[in-house]
Length: 435
Image (tube, rainbow, N blue to C red; front, side):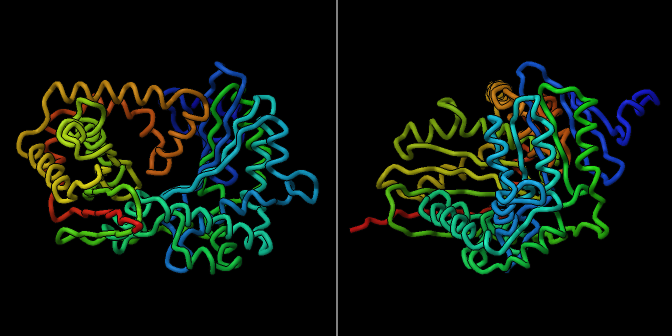
């Protein structure tokens, strides 16, 4: 970066740019900052992504990141109901959209505000980064709210089966635990344990602030420096999650039997970490197998009346993930029959690969879905959030170039490498008649 530009963004180091997005580091505390100016609408999205999620939890405090997400809306040093400046009130009075989400590898807090109110969003996120109250009198009612979320999930056949498949596929790695945590941890984790978790991970040098929309870059960086610059970096090294999943040495199975209306088959296989080249092959294979009426599973399962819908899960994570086919069965259909069709199709891909027409159609579908998913400043920030979580925000800006470069032989080789019986976990949800 030229000396002139360094002066323009005083207090920041320029790191790199990709796809129109620029990355800076706040020198004071190593906060990563991403900026993308887009004047198409008079709004701006401000998002803080923390590099902490259920991946960083352990027995006794599973669900801690999610419970903290709730508590961090209950007040901080400068924004609280006692001062008449509660976060929800402050932002909703401006017409802002606000929320937060938690997942395996990250948690994020965001605001979509009229551009003239960008500073308010920045001030709020800076304040709760280090000065959230996290009081016991707030934890008790929020625990009840989170437990209600947990119970809603327990009433969903898909959620229950998905949770059991992950818990069966992963034994040592924290992906074994669902993001919301286990019920007994939700109910019994202490406020002190949550505070300890907060003071371990919620620091500027463990976060990325993203600003997208209609704003002046120089002014936005100045506001970030003004508010986040009051924080120091964490004095201690942010703990690394170093547990690796041992090699799987045989197929695994799990069955859930509950009262319900829809039976489900889930067939899962271990996949590599999100930044691995084979991720793009699995993204396209998912389209070929299950996206649209021309897909293989639609023709062989849905058109044959064996299932009402097919859902393919192939989301990339920071560590190994799962490539899962979910089939929601037509009443009376045998689970094993649909499982066999799915596995036979995998075997066909391993032996014969995919056709050029299938590959071209999958790439066209991907171009369309990516275009739709990047409409608006919040959509872009959300997609960047997931790329940040898996380890490199440029995964977002380079995604389509990598997709376009995937060959049919790469998809076949990825199938050979990962869609093996010994790396599989099959789950059945068997819907029981309430009578």
